[in-house]
Image 1 (cartoon, one colour):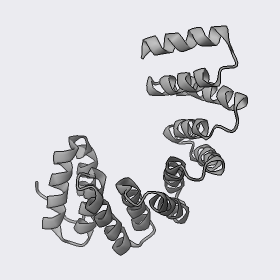
Image 2: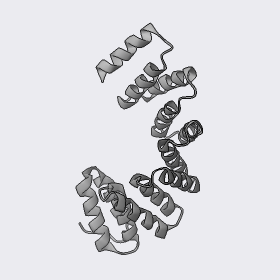
Image 3: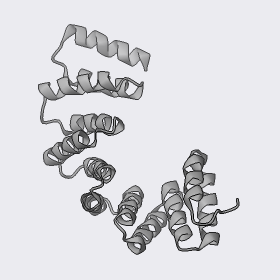
Image 4: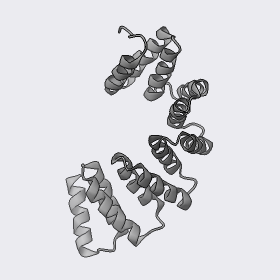
Length: 205
């Protein structure tokens, strides 16, 4: 990645009007832990070519990672205006809205993702989370089931369905989902432990 960054630096030294160089350098800076540098590059790329929806998605992702959810939502909304058929912008705006507590808005965005791509298991998982946060636990469980029917290895759907089972007192089914979740993605162990710790009755593993 260092070589790619050096190549972009050389390109910009020759021509400061290169949209692709700024956008690509922003991607590299974001991936290598320099979000402020990435923001500066995306800002310049947008100044040069304000109708490229991808840059708004990229900049929105940086805002999202910085927990600046209002700015993230605004960038994803602009990406949607420029290209309403790109599901990434809808999905990411749904995530920003959910982080802000706008569960109805998040559900609407995830639903649009599913309309664009009915096989997007992650969109069902995220919509399930927003439904549960808004109090519709039954429909949330339906969405987790839909996600897993599409992709049985969707670890976050297993984790969240397991939480739903746990809340219903169905501990055997919860344990089965949690175990399968960790077989697929062991990095979710801390998140799972936090869920079990908050449960009404401690599950002994």
